[in-house]
Amino acid sequence: MKWVKVFSVFMLLHIVAWVGAHWYKKERPLEVLLVADTSFALKPEFPSMQRWIEDFANDDRYRNIVVGTDKALIGPLADIPSADAVFRVSFGRSNPDSLKRYESGRYDQRIFLSDGSFTPSGWTLVKFP
Image (cartoon, rainbow, N blue to C red):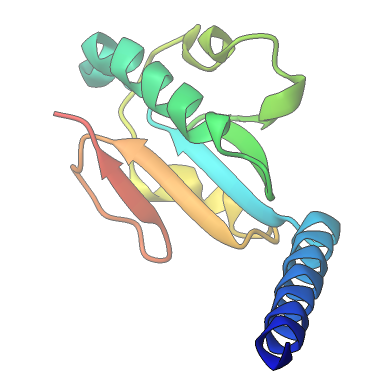
């Protein structure tokens, strides 16, 4: 009988911890900035980048994802009707200065989808060949 009580206490602690973690993460979601390099050189990679964004967004339970390009901020991914909106226009070459517009934002994670021609500091680089 003692093992039933011990098991019940551990189950109760587990459930309380799970509910508490769920509530905490739901109230304080991770703010993620996702920026895509839309330079001409990467135009053939746009479908791959779009699939990567869609796969990344499938697991957004405790994340708010904001999308932009190296040229402009687009907005929350949940408000964009399709990931095609990110890749409508391609022009120019991306450089480290093009990401300076995002320095003032308060994001927990910054992800840059690019060809790896430069690696911005403070960003996670996802390289597309």
